[in-house]
Image (cartoon, rainbow, N blue to C red; front, side, top):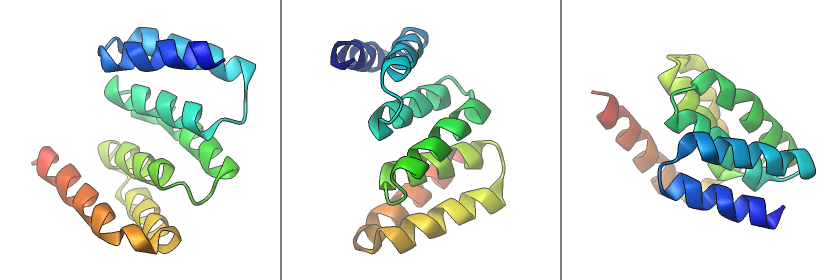
Length: 118
């Protein structure tokens, strides 16, 4: 599994998103309880603009670790691009409540996301 993850990460860094997606999926077939793999596959879906497909992975990641900041922010991002602004707001609120020491970072994330969309 670790080799598949490394190969997937390498493909992702090279912007070979389809290849990364295939490798993350194979890794998840072997280990179903990895928050990192679900987050990475969700981010790959987001890069491919397949925002709807990212949602189940992020919801699963949050079932595994409901405090994971990366999962909440990726969930917010996918919902933002899907124009599900109520769900976007809920994800940001949860991120803030569960990660109070990272409020500045979360606010920067929101500002950057909104700026890129203008």
